Length: 559
Ligand code: ADP
Ligand code: MG
Image (cartoon, rainbow, N blue to C red; front, side, top):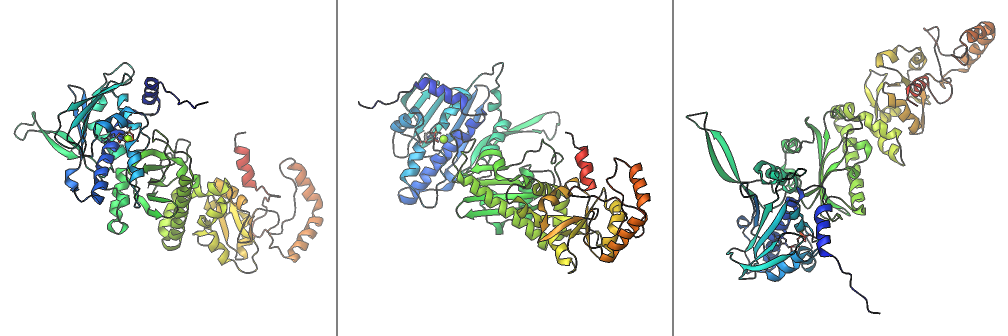
């Protein structure tokens, strides 16, 4: 039997596309600007191989004009244009992408910047317009044509008058309804914001006539209005610039402009990766903890760009939870986007980039710890707790990744030390890494349990954060040394002699101890002669794995 072609109800298909692909109406502007940028790119690529074509950068731009009174929004470009056939094929056939075909045809080694691929973006104009008119003149053609459509009903193509090569798209913006607002897409300021948000790094100027009002010089009551053409986009993204051309101030300005935080960045990481994953990124370690950081409201993630066009505001998959404090952006050419270009297919490429980024952050922190101790401690004060949570919530290799980044206050001068520093400080006879848990350093210092260990000249790590001991229990060991709470029953430093003494004392006062135990019934498990007390009469110790402090926390947790 002969195979049959699928048929599609194109009217329905178009309606579906217009109304269900995109989550936000404002995206239409991103799509139309991207098309214009592609059209200019095509002239640029043609000029590379065709001597007859000159490419003077100044001649190429995109212009956005809004006419509030007539509800008209116009997008004009000086790109390659479309002839009659191309209008028919590219704007008349859903899911036909001239740009994708162009990319395939001219497969260039240095990678294309062409954005289009799915052949649906153009129709997003119908989300905000009930009438779209395209006047276009192609580079290779002497005639211009008009394509006109009111959406699902179809389109018409007619000859038109137009001198210049390029395309002009006129949208008749919809009237507001009870539920939907469209006026905003005629508002100069709003349009500028949308352009900045999605299209700031389009490589050609996006121009707008911007009207400014200023009080008259001689009469402050009255205003002078003047209109001038401005370029709205920044064009060259800072991440495509050479690191050596950029100063700390440039990065800080980018951080502020992007509103990554209201503080200053403590550190930036500028990546230009050319390996298995090709991408650029600028990452920041903020200086202070965002107010909602340790709450459920905090959303981690990096901005994700594809070829300089914003795809996602907060791509969570790019950051592990334990580095959720990192801010910044990633731009990559080879992401597999879904059809709305608002989301990604979960692909290998993204995973690769995420892994790469994680390693870069890790090594940045490691080198900060090594070479810029003061900065690292500042960082640690803001986000150290998150690293400890990371160790505690260990999945796979996570704790190994993070253990070298931990710091704790030490009994030695109350300075912060890393586990590595602690272990290299250990005298030979010391078997364990000792720690003491308490509300504050001062409180811990007064604990009788710390006496014997300190007398021995051994350092103690002071755990003042709820999560500290939980994290350490996950680690169990560091460089083959086990962790031991100073409150545990057996400290591993009592001499045999002391053992014997304690045992004898225990026998001697057996009745007293049993009486005490009876009085404290249900509150303690046993009363024993201590092997470790010096100046204090009594102390509490824990048996087994759960320390007294952990028990307190566990008891306080809601069930
Ligand atoms: P995509 O950009 O993914 O290809 P679109 O629906 O946005 O899909 O556009 C379809 C096609 O129409 C483009 O591939 C391109 O060939 C053509 N096109 C759209 N806008 C323009 C323009 N401003 N100038 C020249 N060609 C355009
Ligand atoms: Mg497009």
